[in-house]
Amino acid sequence: AGRTKPSAIQEGSCSVPEDSKPAVTEALRAAILAGEYAPKQRLVEIDVCERFGTSRFILRSALQELAAQGLVEFQRNRGARVRDVSFAEAIEITEVRILLEGLLAARAAKRATKSDLAALRKLVKDMRSAVEKSQLLTYSELNAQLHVAIRDIAAHETAARVLRQLRDQTVRHQFSLSVVPGRPMVSLPQHEAIVAAISAREPEQAERAMHSHLQSVIEAFRALSVAAMRR
Image 1 (cartoon, rainbow, N blue to C red):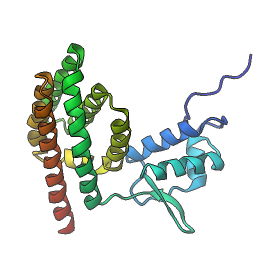
Image 2 (cartoon, one colour; image 1 turned 60 degrees about the vertical axis):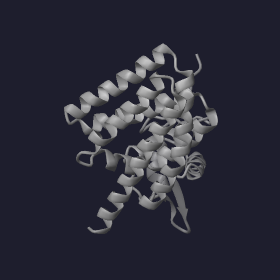
Image 3 (cartoon, rainbow, N blue to C red; image 1 turned 180 degrees about the vertical axis):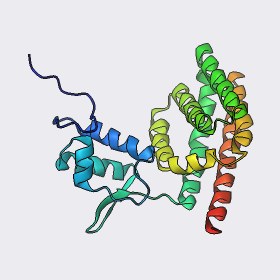
C-alpha cells in the first residue's frame, strides 16, 4: 500500500509533503502565538526547518504568509523575525475591533439558538469560577473562547477573518492584561453584560456592551504602556 501523507507537520518530522505549506504556516503561527518565539526574535531558517521538518522553500513561503498576517517581518540582510507590536499599535487594533466585534455581538443577538445561548452562559459561568479560584490563565483562555463563540454565532465571514488576524497580533498584550491584578474582576461583569444582552436578543444593547468592554481594554493598555515607560 502507498504511504499516507501526514495531515499536519509534527516537530522533528523528516517528511516534507509538497502540500505542507498550510500545515507549516499554522504550526509556526501557533508557536508564535504561544510565546515560543519572542517578539523581535530571529527565525533562523535552518533551526525552524529542523524543528518542523520542512524545507527552506516551504518555510520561506510560510514566512511570507505570516508576514502578510502581521506576525512576522523581514529585515534587510538578516532574514525574518517575530514582529513586535507596540502598545500604541495594540490600541489602534482594539479601536478597529470595537467596530467589528460590536457588529458581531449585535448579529449574535439576532442569530443565537437556544444551544448557542446555553454555551455562552456556560462560558461566563466558568469564567466566574476561574476568577473566584484566581485561575488567571484559565480565565484568559475562557475569555478568548467567548469572543470566538460570539464570532461564530454571528457568522460574518469577512469580519471573522479580519478579527482573527487582529487578535493574533495583540495576543501578547492580551496575555499581559489578563494577569494584571484585579483585571478579571473588571472584565468579568463586562462579559456577563454582553452575554445577557445577546440572551435577551437585544442587538443594540449587545453592541453597546461590547463597545464598553473593548474601550475598557484600550484604557487598560494605556495604563500598561505608561507603567512600562516608567520601568
